[in-house]
Image 1 (cartoon, rainbow, N blue to C red):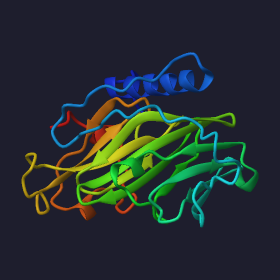
Image 2 (cartoon, one colour; image 1 turned 45 degrees about the vertical axis):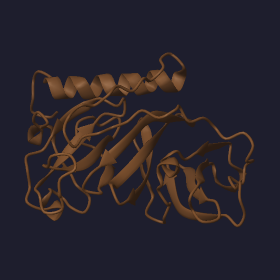
Image 3 (cartoon, one colour; image 1 turned 180 degrees about the horizontal axis):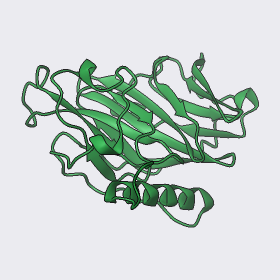
Image 4 (cartoon, rainbow, N blue to C red; image 1 turned 180 degrees about the vertical axis):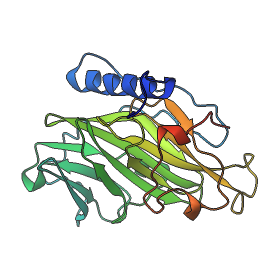
Length: 236
């Protein structure tokens, strides 16, 4: 970070995250998810998603399909294509003549895709977040890209408060995942409890958490939550 002579633990953690992602994209490393035992910070491992081979460049498996959302990342068109009913879908990278089609995995958890389900963040290591909500909160999966090579990550991200976002917190070379959680015991009524932002590197490791806020809309920069390394501390 600017103004700091010696990188702190948070900066080093983020830097390591970027190295892990670059390694995964080049085949030099394989990402493995680890269990997250922090209260309210559940992040679960899912089977490694792979490029869909039986769908074709259209990204459609069950007609009628529709393009729910479109983003442009470094000149590459990224589209979220949903099958009929939007209970399954694919990320189509490269437009209608896509060179890569990646299956969504959050729909396996009862998530219905919407026009708000896609968010992309351009950087040296770019990322797209596919997200959706159900009665338990928000669930998301991340697909990362570098030099036109895109790779889906194994880890799923969960937010009790129903808020997931990609944004730059620590590293300028890649975004981080922000997941907002309630300060609340499991199985309790958490709707009116304070919230905090939990930050993950793209490698899946927890970087830190913000202080508590009374409501979601009090988080810095809401609705596009923006945090800095100085605002992070150990997670509850």
